[in-house]
Length: 229
Image (tube, rainbow, N blue to C red; front, side, top):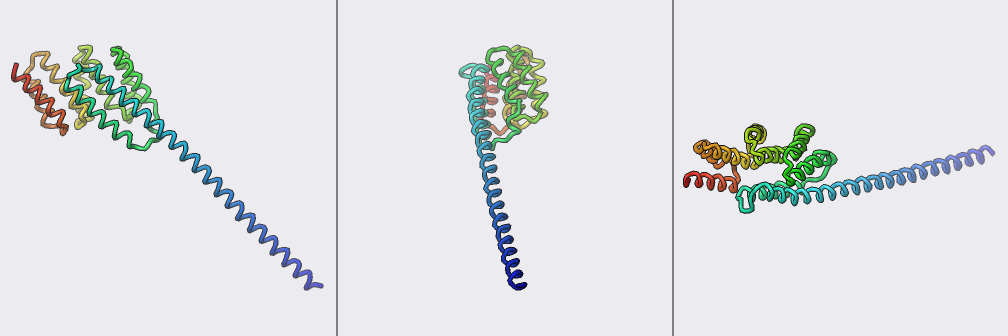
């Protein structure tokens, strides 16, 4: 009798252990499937962010090219060179994976500033670009914001403030092509003040210190024009 009871207990324990093991395996499988679902949702959200960022960058490229058309005369070599520089700059950005950090508000201020710039509302444009520099010092729009502020002052014939921005770019971004373009503006300001030797030295500095062939050619063209005069 005792033998039968012991056997019965062993069978019951075996069944219980089997059920517990099966439940454990089922739970683990279910949880694993749930984790996969969470990962899929996260990947889908990441893809949506990247697609949004890609579309945003494409729109920025078109807007910037239109802005350059407003800044400079139709046949201006500087205009063509700046547009070419931005094309390379945005093309590189399109290959960079999107991230939450890239979706900060600096892009909104930057786009608003460009809108004001195209409408020739330069003071309002400067205010928006300043927000990018002051509130988002790590923004990817900071160099372009410096450039537009310098251009806004230049187009208002506020040459002193324009030169201050050129100085800032020389200190902060000495090797950036946009710094070379605003240095050409510096040379043009020197020309307007009849300081032709100074203008020539600025153009020569751009020609010898920047790697961009477009910048070098434009600097050489300006030097040649000075010599002709």
